Structures are given as structure tokens and as C-alpha cells.
Length: 215
Image (cartoon, rainbow, N blue to C red; front, side, top):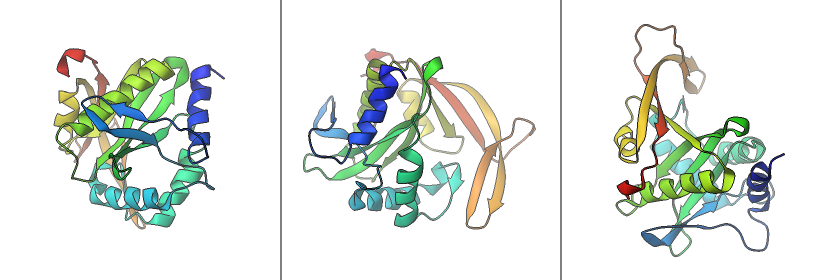
């Protein structure tokens, strides 16, 4: 195991335990910071779970899986999926009082390829102008500097208004893949299917050009 991979595992394993925890300060928004979400089953924060559930439901069409989230399902996702995935970590954005106002993460890490994707960037709708951009830039530069993940990407649904948000940050579109809709009891899934000639929705793949002059 590489030191960077071990660091990510340590952050997830120590979140919620006593002692200091990582807090990423956000340049230009010094009273806000990024905090690793507690995902270990014995340390999960019920308020975090409530926020994650509520905000996901507000933005359900931005995800590849559409369903009505509840706190039990969210807590199980954190403890059984996020916690044991060594290619994923989730952060809360906290204000000066420690109250969560949004979340974002990195996922689908391929350590050997130095590859990572921005994931699940969600606001409560009341964040200061420019905060989400600054927070994501902070998180991705941390991933590059501390985890050695040089190749940064994001995948966004073609009808998601956030496409403009990512382009302003310097994400460059590289391809669009058609999506097939699969309807299951209580859930709709959008699955990449390059064989489709036309589709209702596409998944837009981007790579990040980290030009500091955009700050």
C-alpha cells in the first residue's frame, strides 16, 4: 500500500474519534472549511446523515441513480460502502459555527493511474457566492498535492445546469456517452451505453485544467 493510499484510509478511519482531525481551509472563505464525513458505523453523525439525505433528495436528478433517500439508507451507504471503498472520501463544508452547508467528495480513484474524479458536489442552496467553486478547487488541489492524484476528472449529466460551474473551474469536455434508462422498483438508473445512436441524456466526461489564473 502506498503512503497516499494509507493516508486516505487513516483520514476515514480517524474521523469521529477523539483528537485532531483534518480541516481544509478554503482560500477566500477563511471562516469555512472542509471536514471529512464520519463513515465508520460506530461514529456516524446523525446530523450529517440528515443533511446528506435532505440535500440529495433536493438534487435527485443530478445523480445516476434516482430514488427517495432516507436516513437509514444514507447511514448504511456511509458505513457499508463509503467507509470500505479505498477510492472514495466525502467531505462536509462547515461554516464558522460548525454547521454543515454542503458536501463534496472524490471518488473512483485509480491509484496506479494517478486518477481521481470529483464527486457529489451538493450545496444546501444558501452558500455564499463563489464558495462551492473555491471549496472544490481546494479539495482537488489537496488530492493532487497530498494524495498524488494528478489526473482529475468529473462526469456530469448533460442536462445538469452545473455543467457551467465545472467549465468555469477549468474542466474540459472530452466525450459524451449515451445513457440507457433502467427502471427498477423504487429507483431509476442511468447506465452508460455507447451502442446507442441517440439518447435522452448523456454523461459528459471532463478532465481538469488547473489554471491558477482563474482564481
